Image (tube, rainbow, N blue to C red; front, side, top):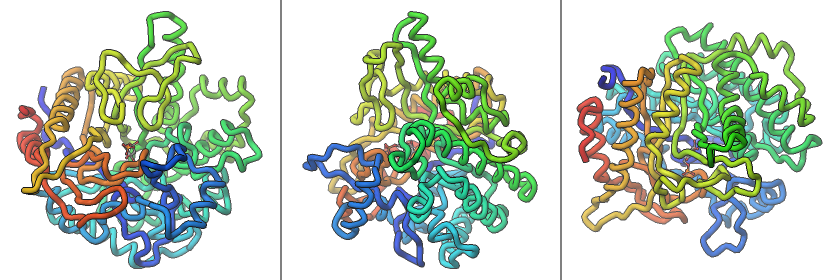
Length: 483
Ligand code: BG6
């Protein structure tokens, strides 16, 4: 079996990591604008995306001194025409981007949006359509207006549901005629790994235990997502709306039943937000976990009805690596930026120690296909690597081509297995600031952006070898994966 004719080939970005222009047109600050790049020689080895209230206050105090790389992104704000032309040259059918909430509603509480922001996104969508590129828009890729963090402790408060749905209703009313594919929350499950990033939370400030605070906030996000989906179904009948999780395929460390059980439990946690968003109710396993661990959620009024009425049309995932789980609590070592677990001796790793596992993608797709029976959109995948810009403007990234070729082959195999995969948008199609490390030197793109971790550089764009390779892949609708 080949890729379906209308398969959505493209690439993915997010506003906070790519857009820049953070102080233009009255845009308010988002909580990602206060994540600081921890420099190489910094003795503070704290993981940059886990910001505590103390760190946050320090960052505010040094507003003009610290390196806040997300504020710069890759300057898409000023270069969107050039960038979209490059995507069109590769033959993109779709382009995943996100809208910056604070560019439209600077504090998140305004009734009316800022004109400049509204116009900016119209311009971007118009530019995409000029080339027949269908935008795929994430409504929230982590970032919330900073005042919602300061006043409400982010998603811990049910007030966020009210502010968010005001924002998303505006997006639907204003842009649905220009955007067919939408995602409510980026990687909604990541709040369980990084509470600041995923929830705008200072867990230490809450009266609840850390875990209860996180699950309370996640509950509010699930409600906000369901209410948004319902509004979509009522008001934007031509659009499709999906959820999104960071999908981790977990393998047992050994075939010891204890390891297999621990792996199953990890999988239940990884899947549970998708269970809620796709099936419309909380899985019993999670509710029992809450009970056993004294996690008391204040459920939103009528939440069961809201969740049932807000089921998504498709499932979307990011997929980068797999994880190995042991029942032995001491057997934990870091893999990747976000997850602490065991690495896999059968797999090679990236420069950032993420296991490269194309077969894991096939396993995941099959698993999800059977579990949900909904179309699956792979909206992130890719290799973060050190790239070198040669003096003639070329970038030879054979390692990226190899990575992508194997993963696209895995999708093809999954299609052959019977999976309903509708699109593929590799991450950071034009280089952007890495999320986990707040750096430019971890690059994913087909297009090189001349900027370093400190923001020095021309920000000019250069086509990498993978640019020409991906163009060929799209042009052959995935038939020609030769390297
Ligand atoms: C996903 C996020 O988890 O992984 C992206 O949705 C992120 O925002 C991507 O950039 C890759 O992670 P990193 O840390 O390499 O940028």
